[in-house]
Image (tube, rainbow, N blue to C red; front, side, top):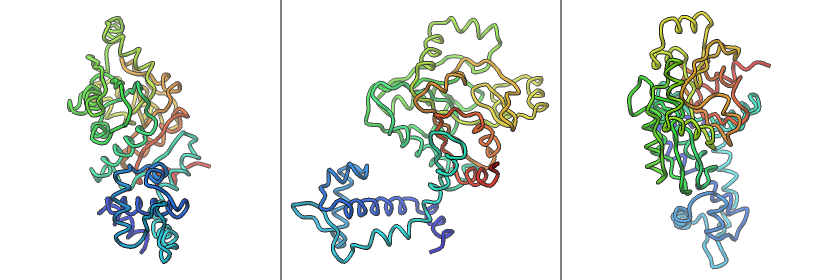
Length: 342
């Protein structure tokens, strides 16, 4: 089967590929550690014991494994099955290889590429949220504070984030923007708190304020608490913005938009606007988290994809802190690899 056919299969039936990968992983660990018990197999694969039991029952029913008192083993006639599966599945891991290459090029903590183009497929946008939730779940600890921005991809996070930790606190990393309430940082922090059985705080202020209003708000107890929590947070989850879209959402004055045009801004993050070389061409003070706060975080998850954001993401990576984990799609990953500079 050609790589293009496998990619099509992965796009049309991703659950099938997920199940196939899971069974391959289980069989691989059984072969390497046989005889092995279900609990040990669960620990080595990261698959829950309940699902391990279900998968082993199925694999036993089709005579791929034997379950004995001493543990689980492969049946003799299927001892080479894992090598055959590895050859079959290898093309589907090309995005993983691409991610590792790009991580090395940009020297950040992590780089994950999923199939598709988020501009063209809602399933790809949902996939970005799902992978982000999985990665975040791996590093969350009891009592962690998470700062989160708004956006359509962020709004799907609560559908997938189910960590096995407690007392999480989600904090809006920015004030309100001119977008659907469902996509606001406040709404997303609230949804994540509810989905995880944790807590959240709200920031009752727009993201873009006049200097005098901002200075006044900074002394309000509720706002002051949010500022302090964003400074203290362990993790940040944020998007990467196209500058003129962000300026529009902030209802920026025409004079500011002209500055962005004149200076050829191509990306925005946390109130900073950058040109294609990563130089700051404009900055606005916002009530949310500040760019200079990012370097001290345990990890910063940057989530963005789609053809329309290729240049914005490429530029952001030039100034991203080293603790950044980027979750993006093929449309961006392949663009970055094609346009990488030696």
